[in-house]
Amino acid sequence: MKYKPLLLLANKQDLEVSMDEVDIVERLNVHSLVNEHKCPTTIELCNTVEPPHSSKRCCSKAGSRHDGIQVGFRWLMKQIDEYYDDLQLRIEAIIEKEQKEYLKKREKWKRERKLAGNGMNECEEEEEEEGGVGRVGGR
Image (tube, rainbow, N blue to C red):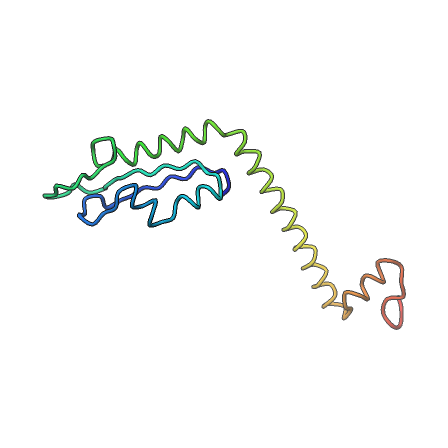
């Protein structure tokens, strides 16, 4: 999550009990998350249904009930566009690391299956690979 943009959409703004941005930051402990992971963050108030008879403001700074969502996604796309090169480098590094871990696990799994198939344990296999004696009865 480090350095990745975080968009929080606060839905249900048509309800009298809905929280505003300040309440959300406090209740969800957003400050510590943002500071720890150093991620740009925005909170947009939104509502996906038209409130029947509510004096409650249902949207963010914008106006219609979907404006908060649109404003939030525009912000998120701008963040991705601005920091694309950096994000891409980090994503590639993560993928490379995961691929190496996968290949390592796969090789271990293959080795374990091979050992199980010929009755050798790992130490015996390592000795055999290093030119050691290997199994009793030799090959």
